[in-house]
Length: 505
Image 1 (cartoon, rainbow, N blue to C red):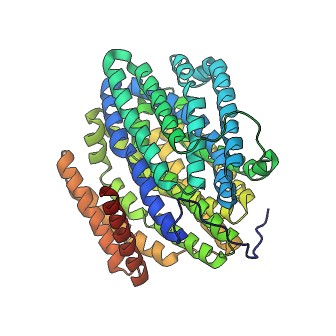
Image 2 (cartoon, one colour; image 1 turned 45 degrees about the vertical axis):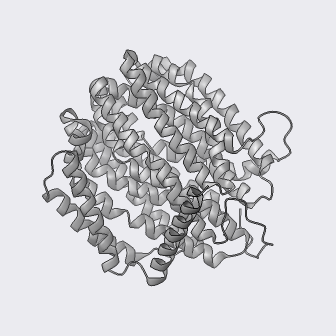
Image 3 (cartoon, helix red, strand yellow; image 1 turned 135 degrees about the horizontal axis):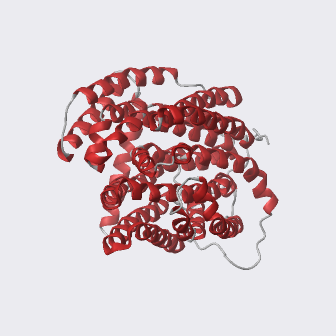
């Protein structure tokens, strides 16, 4: 599928969009990331609570069950998400597209929930965890609810309602913490954590329906073939990315059969959530914004925006190095002494998470450029490489082997993706940004490793201080030009004025 490079007639911006799409994307990214970022405090508090209540083996069973459910749920969501962003972003009326997407999510979610219910015993036996079967059956209830909520969230992104998208996400994470803690504290153990997750999905769906109400019944006029034209190649991309996400954990459990080891590894994965949350916040908004630029014929602006997106992703490397250097202190502080071994995979996995953010950003740009098939060729080979690597290294090295394979696959995939983007759409790799990031990363790693800190307060102060030093390093090395700094100041002044105006009502 090729994009017509000739300009098309401009259409009015939807209510959520400002006059400047790049600025709107930046503001939207901040809002959505802040909403998703609530997973950090709520998720870490939840994880710290569960690791102490369930112990490594119980936490391992819950993590494996949650990973399997998340793989199914996000496969459904990602299958239609990017097609939804692009088609709604180009449409004058989103309602027929929204109705089609919503019903597809509900249909697939219900079908896969029934399938998981029937296959639970077989899956548990394969993973050498017989107790897992009943937990999977209970967790299957979440699949159609979550899928329906995701359809609504994708519509919100497509129409430019980024602030509302952030609000429903924040509601989910807060509800998840409250429900899980309450139910587990009541003595429901792993089942309580699962029921709490289902309740959180229900809260998110209810909040979404306050903002958009796509038709769940009746006749729809949007042709399914047009949606599937984009969704078909993106389905393979979605499956590939979902397999890569947590494949290491599932293979670690399957090859080693040790729920406690899987629990420790799952705890390490939880500490890499920041990068994943950024990808979840940034890539959909990037795709929605670039789709509008391409439709309006603003190809040069779209390419500059895509290159700036790569700069942002590469700029995450020093923060990954900071986390790697302080991995042991972070693991003990968050999860307790029992989970000290999580520091070893964490120190490696955090770099792989940045690689997968880069892959997500590049594939979003390629989709907006009308090349969705290219995303499959980028990601499918990574799945086979990951499977082969895990089969080789996990029996020899355990969790460190799994983390090494994931990070190498993510890093190589990111490099190939950026080179492919440069070849297909003339978006150059920001090599100067990469050089600055690598130099600053070395300093951040050694400073974090050499600076001892015990306790939550001192560790927070340490990480904050080094994080500020990283930002100063980028400024000192000339990563930001004057126009970018002026635009950033203007954005925050406008946001402050908007918040002040709202407070007067």
